[in-house]
Length: 104
Image (cartoon, rainbow, N blue to C red; front, side, top):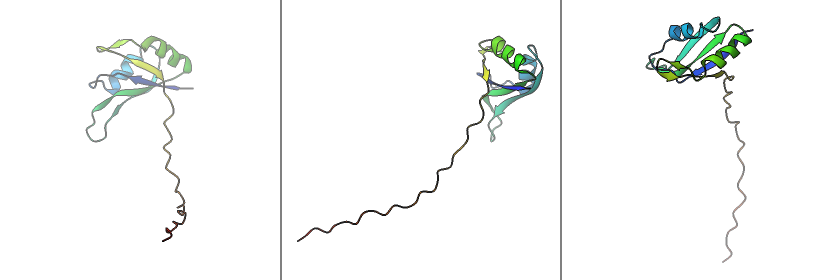
């Protein structure tokens, strides 16, 4: 079963192929993707690598985390599942208590 890894602290110039080639030294890479801004296509400085087995993923974490890659120390860890965005549940309006008029 494949395992996805988070790879952070990437140079903005690093592309998908660079990432794939670098991680191929420790195992079989299924996918390698640098995350980019939609409007400018500029790298966000992190990406994801999917290794073919959990053993290769663990080896990649042990080998690559903290390793210098093009002048930057990589941060490599298991990728966490995407956060579930929760939409606020509609609230029911609450009636304010009646305001008492002062006695004159």
